[in-house]
Amino acid sequence: MCATQYAFPTSLELDATDLNQDFVMVTCQAVADSMCCLRFAAPTSWHAVQMADATPSPNRPMVTLARCDQPDGFADIEVLVQLIPRDMHPADLLECFLSERGFDILNVRRQTDAGGTAGDILAQGMVDGQPRIIRAVTVKDADRVFYLICSSDPERYEALARTFLVAIQTFGLLEPTGQPYAEPMVLIRLDHPVAVSCVVPARWDRRQDPSPPPGGQIISLAHVQGKRIVGRIDVMVLPQDLASSAQRVAEDLMEAVAASGMRIETPEVVPVQNVPDGFDAAWDVTSTGQDHEGRDIEMKVQLLRNPSAWLVVTFIGLSHDEDTLAHLANRKTLDTLLATLHLEGLST
Image (cartoon, rainbow, N blue to C red; front, side, top):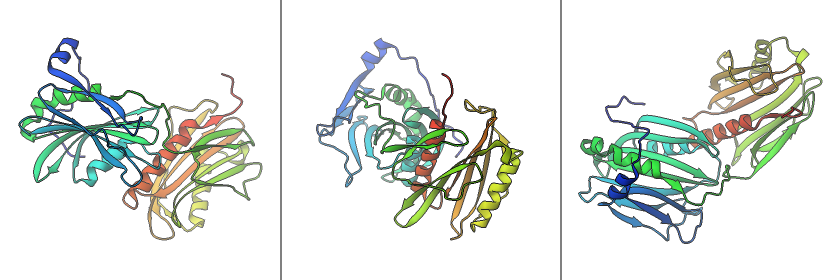
């Protein structure tokens, strides 16, 4: 991320009188897609054009819903919608959208909601050969991600920072579905030595490990693209007395990873402050390395302990540089799994 001299305001007291005098609410409604219904505030003097027939589809996954142009042509606001086949954080998609178009990210604000982690980004780059400053935000609903892209000539950005923030703070869906996921999900469950459940995408291959540790259970998940496995998650439960410490669990895990042909840097086992309900301690283990094909990979492990069992969630997948979209989908799947991880039998 680059250092920036440009303002990145994140909150603004909106006065109703000023808003009514200086701004007009622009409503976008795609005729053929009831989910594409949203609005935002734009200056009254700007020229607004709505693309009512714009509808995202698998053949055209991203379309423009509306555009507002400043009369002198030095700034504009554009609203786009993207159809996503895999669940991803909207903040990651926005960052990918801007980076692919050659923009340098100057500042990022991330905020988690029901649909994942949303993004608010300040960036700079070139548009049609001219330098531009971009302020952009995302809203996700089911399998659609909506982008509000505010663009300005660098010399005029400071004067327009408040205008862009008004558009951002008033940007929202009029008829959200409330569906947090972009794709079908399934519940997986392990039942001994303790009962644990979590949610993962249905498209991930799932199988019970035929050789679990004594008294334990493992479910293995694989993210397959074509004929390649681009991500793996193992969810393992084992009796607490099988390992004396989190360090020992991590060491046994690293031995198993090395035996599979992967080369992983020696990780550090770090205690987690916010321990999930039903557990008395938790640790994170992160590292990077290469798989047996020489591809760059990352490893993330969460170790959870309660009086009866260890719960070990191990993720190994391609790095961001190796396969960006696979990495983003893997990241969202892991976050969803951990967020929905539930130790059954707890009193509420």
